[in-house]
Amino acid sequence: MVGMKAPDVVPSAAVKFFGAGTAACIADLVTFPLDTAKVRLQIQGESQIVEGSRATKYRGVFGTITTMVRTEGPRSLYSGLVAGLQRQMSFASVRIGLYDSMKQFYTRGTDSAGIVTRLMAGCTTGAMAVAFAQPTDVVKVRFQAQVREAESGRRYNGTLDAYKTIARDEGVRGLWKGCLPNITRNAIVNCAELVTYDLIKELILKYDLMTDNLPCHFTAAFGAGFCTTIVASPVDVVKTRFMNSTSGQYSGAVNCALTMMRQEGPTAFYKGFMPSFLRLGSWNIVMFVTYEQIKRGMSRAQQYWESPF
Image (cartoon, helix red, strand yellow):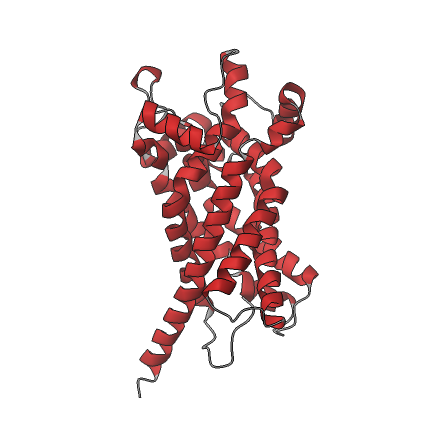
């Protein structure tokens, strides 16, 4: 990222790669209940149409969390966590950890990167990450959407069972279900998230509003989370609905979006907006602050190891 001070050790690509994955896992552990609440709110309208008209079960992010704890137990908030951590370790490592390397690739090794170059780097690493991590995302979403009630039956018994069941019942392609909308979403998210963070941090340091430390990272991460939620929410809802759908429910991601528009109206694309913002905002803060500290710590440890005296 931008804003490295002269005395600071420049982190290597490997440090950024593993640091991003570790920081993203920590952020997921902190914010996972908000992500689960977001998924439940996003699929709620779809469930009502499929199962018949009924009263709204979930109302707002904290109402959703309260309802889930009361009816399904606290563990339901972390349903799909294993797949979520698997996703972040393979996903964030690529889309965040390789972002700076991709910027240098597009600028042919120079440090000057314009907005177009940053957008291209964000789109590229976002698409690459989906190609690696899509199966983990499919399993995570399905676990989060699965109601933990004995009378309703459980869709999957565990993370490995979910991978095997999806591959057996829907084919290997089922593990990459929703790959296109997910690539679209993550290209948008990566650009909005990383480029916005980069630019906000750069401006803060340029005008000496803050030093390159925790308050600066916190402010830039919060702004990035808000901008990302506004831009990415419609694609995120379509991605969640399509990945959670049964075989044949939608002919494709575009059909899913058109069905939502026809049956629920345009507001359906911003279902779960508040938990999305709370989750993305808090996730960005935890991830970027942790990521910056991990990068510095690992770089200094590496320097000390190579030159202890």
